[in-house]
Image (tube, rainbow, N blue to C red):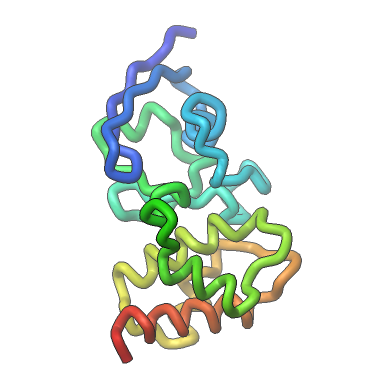
Length: 158
């Protein structure tokens, strides 16, 4: 199988890579680009551990081909913090103990950021709906929801 040359933007940086035509974006990120934040939990798009954004849309990177991000803007967990400055979501996940083992955390953070980018004042129901594609087996969802609520309030300056 011949390689596909892809030029894209990841976390604001121009990136070029060569991948197989049938290679999932998750594998490209982890194995070719060394971005190991997105995790493979299921490989079928059911758990959300591999969540990233493509052109602002939340997607499971295990279901998107690397070749499909040609010319797109990809956002990963590696792009959330600005140097040593954590994103407010990251700070609140720590403050509200909304993480334990860490497998699901990057996916939840990306999903929560995508939600808050579109809706800066979500209700609890909207938060739960926005995070419904992400599964956690350790922490439980209440702490995660509280962390997102606190972040939304903080970011609105309320």
